Length: 193
Image (cartoon, rainbow, N blue to C red):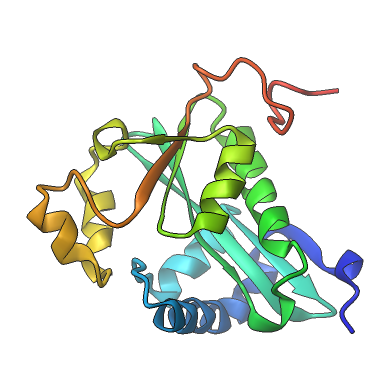
């Protein structure tokens, strides 16, 4: 039996590079099982996120449990929280919510003026984002950075995005704009004690 209180959720560092292949394998397997699209990332890319301390990892007694990372776009005007994944044996423990809250807090600490966004097809991620103060938006309210949208090319649903001129897909765009959000109980910048 897993004691969920012993699952450590922390900012990733060079100490966590050993989990990169397992993280990517877990993401790819989950996407296949769900039949959903996901932008693929290289091991070097995920490793760099860890070394830059732009990632959050969950571990349990030295075992990989979950992960998410930050990407910056449009000259740091936009930040995306991406790659949220929980290993199979750690699902159903509320770990995804803990990781999402920590990556959100890290994003707000590192980029306090940036708009934070997420693309997802999953109802659970939409709910977590809503609870953090995100709202659904059209894609034209997200970054216009071509490099971000090129990341969608590896998604199984990319043809849908292309057919709609880059304006609609199966994903829902969700945005947290600190200029619009005056107060939110989970905002680490607005609610310092």
